[in-house]
Length: 79
Image 1: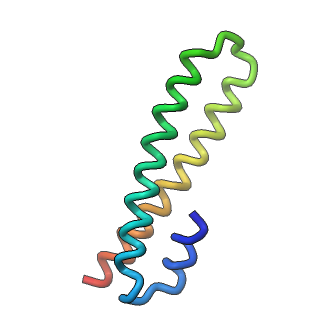
Image 2: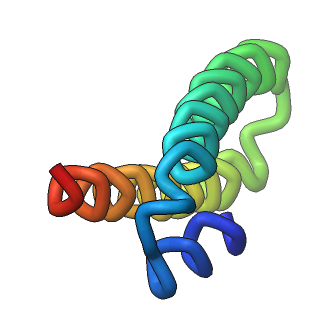
């Protein structure tokens, strides 16, 4: 996510393709994480710590989505 944030801060048109690639990569990772979270929760028998795991996963997902929105905003300004 750091790369995407750096490009967003210093964006110029030569970085457009890289930013688009990072957006796709972040969306793919988010999809994978959501699937793994569901599998993990299905396998957990001990409910201790589940709330914390859910909160951490939610925070991460929220940050990824924020970056995706920032990327879309930067790319749309270019058009």
